[in-house]
Image 1: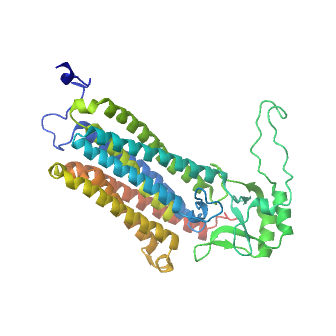
Image 2: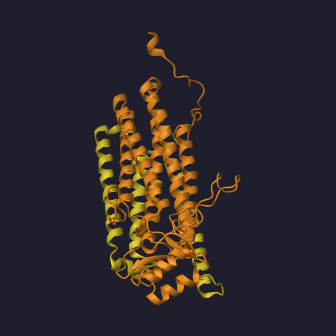
Image 3: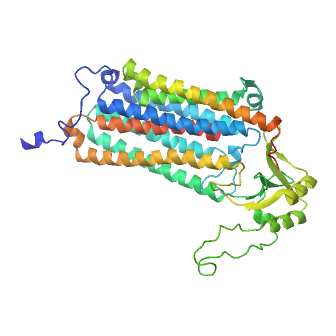
Amino acid sequence: MEATVVKTGTEGKTWGGGDNPPLKASYGKMMIWFFILSDALTFSAFLAAYGFSRYKFIDSWPIADEVFYHFPFLHGVDAPMYYVALMTFILIFSSVTMVLAVDAGHKMQKSKVVFYMFLTLVGGIVFLASQAWEWKNFINGEYGAVETRGGRILQFLDVDGKRVGLSDIALESTQRAVHDRSSGIWFTDDETLSTYTIEDIKAGFAANDNLLIRIQKLDETGHPTVLSREESVEVLNRDAVRVVEGANLIRNEYGHPLFGNFFFFITGFHGFHVFTGVLINLVIFFNILLGTYERRGSYEMVEKVGLYWHFVDLVWVFVFTFFYLV
Amino acid sequence: MGHDAAHGNSVKRIWYVFSLLSIATIIEVVLGIIKPQVMVQNKFLAMSLLNWTFIILTIYKAYYITWTFMHMEGETKGLRRSVVWTAVFLIAYLCFILLIEGDYIYEVYKHGFVKYNF
């Protein structure tokens, strides 16, 4: 009867919470709850700081619909919100499979737990991949813009109100070659160069009467203000100092630099949680396959990682609202 | 533990909550795409009705995720309160203080002597 008395190696190593547990929860479950509480406060600090910066620049904050409108395989189609909505559904669905796994664990149905945990893992990985694609689009940008001396972003429109990319404005590129270590100074790297110089854009803009400039300042209907042709030419020639393509932590073509920073930090911190969630789920998945919890007689460990996974989903619900909707 | 009593219903309940969450998300997405002008222009407590709708739907979703998916409803009152109340009070305070301050700085930029738009 050796097989039935296999130990899991945790006997005597876990503290059960004493003889009179007032919260009727195991030590591990209580601690994951308080970890989640502290993590929730970190995320709310991020989102509240986002709100602070947004209120601070409430009349010039980028509109999420005009930044996130890509959808896979639909090039050039304006599809605001659909992609994040899809990501939200993927995460909610993986939360559902997780809770089904926990439920199957209560009934000690190992094969069902394995199946649902597998689906949860797939959901998590698909979500991470989606986020990577979202980041790629955000970092590469699409239309490009120019920056003024004061750090404001000027974007280009045609007279119909459609966005115009830098490549459609500039007549030619007079950008210099990049100094790499073999042709420039051997111990320094060059800065990243834009495709066009600011002079290319100014010349191209002057040559095409159909082009207008949109500034960040929002009008009373909540849309960015579009300047007249004369104002556009004047502002571009007087203030513009730099071409901006895509986004990094210092500047981005969508508008205020803080918008890019919060995008990277909030979705990045959340993505990091999803990543660690997938890793922990993977460990638990292998433990289930090996029958560890079957031997332990309880699938409580699945419940505990489940709590973390639901928390990640919960955070995304808030990120979705405050970053993409509001 | 309530979920031990009715195993058949617990799976049903999960799918029911999933449909509630999905419907709330779909409403949010549709409103986010249409952006009805009535809801954008009418304000309650300095925030548009559209944003209030988004926030209320988010809290509605958060409630169901915490209560059903995370089984908060099955925990003791003490654990429930020590986690939920702590979070709610601290987050409400943080939002209150930061949003008011952000709006104040906006006013300073707008009416003060700070030249920032050049």
